[in-house]
Image (cartoon, rainbow, N blue to C red; front, side, top):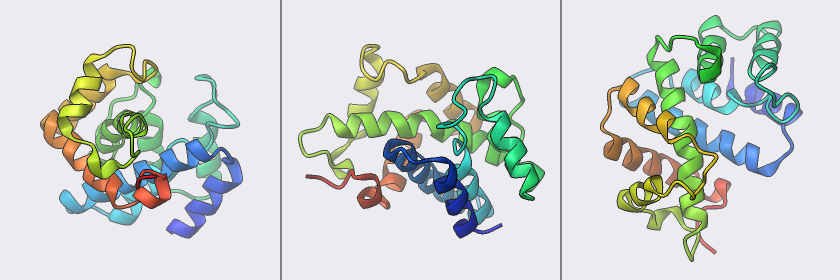
Length: 186
């Protein structure tokens, strides 16, 4: 299991720039949490990179992420990686047991939301995004309405981190790849 093989798999199934950027952002956040919790950074990163790799071709809840999990199993990915990816889909009803499962669920929606907050800023620079701005937008149900706020709150709680600290942590993780995400300003 290595990042290059995971990246090639992601790019084989995903062409949309927005989905690729989301994968890179989740990867960065997962790697940051792996470092914080002294976990396997490569494994956490690959989970982040591949959590939605099948979404572009198989977006319906009856397919995603189950089709992807079968592909991963065929390619020899470990069971804990596959389970983490499956458990991030709340509608499957799987219990998030490991730290990796919980971290993926906690970062997935929040990464997308922070991206949306950044993109409405005049300079589109994540370095200018503050926790208070994210919290203000979280309260506005019309902003990024497709983002499930309940998942953001529940994710932080399951991971055992304060929401404000979680938001700040994810912003910092995303800053490390801001050029790749197109969030480094105009």
